[in-house]
Length: 260
Length: 321
Image 1 (cartoon, rainbow over the protein chains, first blue to last red):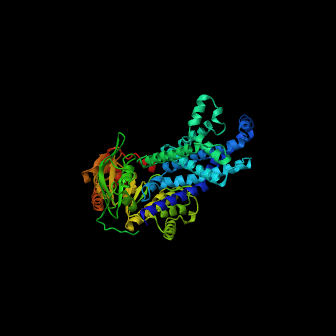
Image 2 (spheres, chains in turn yellow, purple):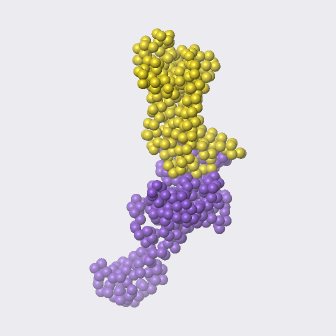
Image 3 (cartoon, rainbow over the protein chains, first blue to last red):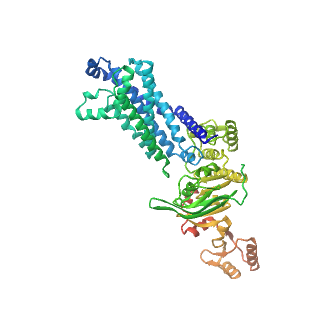
């Protein structure tokens, strides 16, 4: 076999290992899924009435249609925590030194994690979408719109995963690793997840308009329920691609640094 | 195991290895030569630099200075060729807790690029050999310390490395598991594999190693066979206990060169540890009709060697006994 096919086989082996972990230790996956679902129910059944009244009349939307795309993005961000923790656990245990002293493709450890986490994260985003539909979310997207929305979720998952792999690598312990990605989870709150930035006070509004999650959420919302997207689509893809690249380079650099 | 090498080949050959972490000098220029097919033990207390040495030789970290040829390849220039020839079992458990014993072995078989059937065959063989067949289907997290260590070693062996690094292979094991591990290590070498092990247990080095290097504060303070090292310290002593002062006095006159303790009624006679010396000594005492109440022979062990060489006692011993 060639070097490339060995590398591909190593990556597949590592992916299989991470998927088995996922199935053996589902508690993490459940907690990753639980938070966005609770958020969804909270904002639809508890806060949604008032928020929707303040926002809906002008736009002609029910609140769940407004908030569901943001919650889907939140579900993707929520996956970052489990990625960082599982990478960190791997790095702080002896098995990583075993991998490093074997003649295997060096990046296969990280690509295995990334592929496994992207699959897990996208699955949880799909499940959250399903719950949203069950409680009244009514997307109007065409099949092409669904495909584009799915693509955007995968791209976002890819970006947040590489970033959280890097965070998992720099953390000294699994506890730190579970804290580092938390800003990633809170950024959507200061964006267009729950209310439009236009309704926020001036300073926060400025931040909300220019931070990455607002164009990402607005694009997903546009694809699913037909609100205008405009330039947001390009900006969203650029943010995702840029974050993925930075996360990848950062993770690779930390991983290859010797003597942790 | 396959891949026998002629005994003259060096499995490890290192010169002038140096390594610092920040301001701390961990290795201060050490030279190592390990012939293929032998057991080599790096002996030293905690913090002596043993693990750092293994990390450098197994391509985990780079030395700041010096050269190392491992399994015929330079560790810095051709790390992948070194990795393909070695197996490493470190101090930290390197098993995947969420996988079963068998899955752990199959994971390693895949990463060694074995064919599926061959991987299963070797995994089954190792599980049987290490008495793990009964627990092969249970997650490694449920294993005892001794079982984990055996699984760990089996995972190292599935790729059939020619050279195996074992970093403190028996630390934390109960005496029975430790002896089991020693048997496994001896069997490996009987099959032609070279073993490079570190230990803080003098007894372990004495039991296993063909050659021992004593590492202290990043420097090699001695190297040789266990017997050669024992010869480095003054010979043993025979301690004779008497029932009264007159017996002691007559014995002291008969034996000449001996140190006498009038209060304890003992004589300590330096000796070379041979049976002939003992026989001669007892013969002289018989001729003088001296009755000996008790006799004990102290031969130097590696504890004495360690103390002599490093100038400080082996402080790790209490944890071991």
